[in-house]
Image 1: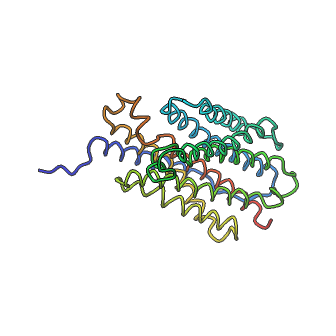
Image 2: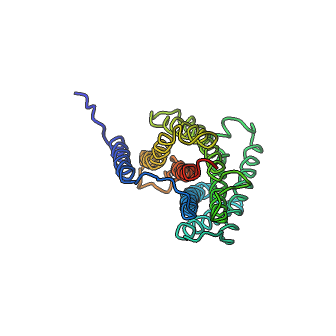
Image 3: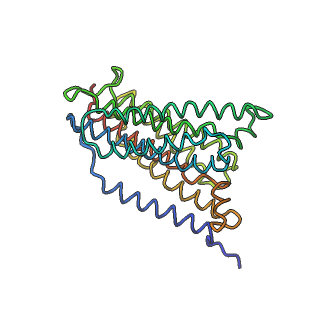
Length: 313
């Protein structure tokens, strides 16, 4: 008789996703609804949320680049750079999260600016790495060479952190603005674009995997909706679909954790499983990559809070 019950790694995947969903549901249910207020403390609270988002992205980049560059045997000494800048960005984010002062911190500013620059230079290195191979910018090289979108994550971490410092630096008696534009709108648009870039990178790698698991469609369907809703809120009236945007961003944040579980199962399915972790961690799906969606969703929630606190600015 055929056994239709999930076994082995399939059962593990279901357990991980179910556990993450239940935990996320509990966290979301316990959150208090955001009540718009126009106080300096609200701006600092939003800045600290951005610090947490930047730190989540930095942690994802730190572990992911360490694994990927280890696979490349650090043949170029510059490959150590993202590990250093991501570590510094993570430390600055932790410091900013604990900082309740309403003023920018020069050291954090410098670290975040360095992280942003590192991502831009890293993207250039990755493009050069692909272009010098036979076939140039072919599908084969895009699939298996240095990932084009990976360095952008550390740039996003740096930009979110830099924007958090601009929030702290805003006048306490004035609505927060960046380059003369309401801060919530600037952060919302930037986060929306960041989500779409991350979707493109995820879509490319999941296309390489032939979407053999239906769950692989989630990172290319849920985040684009979150990006569209957030972009619409940032460019138009917030009250039109603010509640839907908030819940969709929370679901996208949860997707990042669930994706980590799925990738862990993908590693376990490799030959030798976790006993052969040195090879399977390097060659299997990147476990630290999905939390990038979590970090960007957190930034989107911070932007949404700013938009609600200053709806007419």
